[in-house]
Image 1 (cartoon, rainbow, N blue to C red):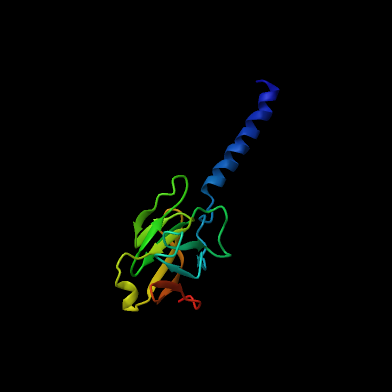
Image 2: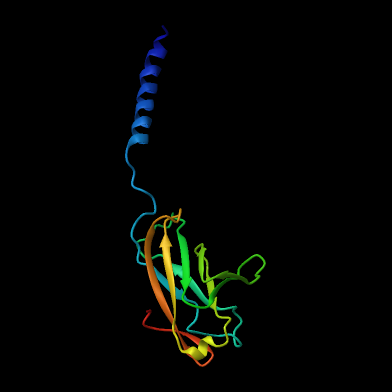
Length: 159
């Protein structure tokens, strides 16, 4: 047998064993930390007739505990009204409902019912941050939107 082969075989065996051990070692699941998210409003108030936006801009912030390498899933829910998508490349406004899954981009909240502001009922907007597969809830937060005439006002107390 070739003397050089005698050195290669044990090295190859060690490499194979270390790879095998790495594949069977339990690794912590990625993107599974509990989070303390927040909703970042793009403005303090929104009026249907006095805005260059299609709705109240809302952006998700997964919180300080979040990993920058995780592609979290964001679920937006609203007790009334609807969310809109408005982004590049075409900037077409699309209604995406009051229970929708989105990436980390801005969504816009608005209402279609002209009687909603007169009702005086606050609208609760909830943001859920989930793992990339959407199966595990990692954190959630709510934001209340109140009314001032025909304007939706983001409450400063956050809830």
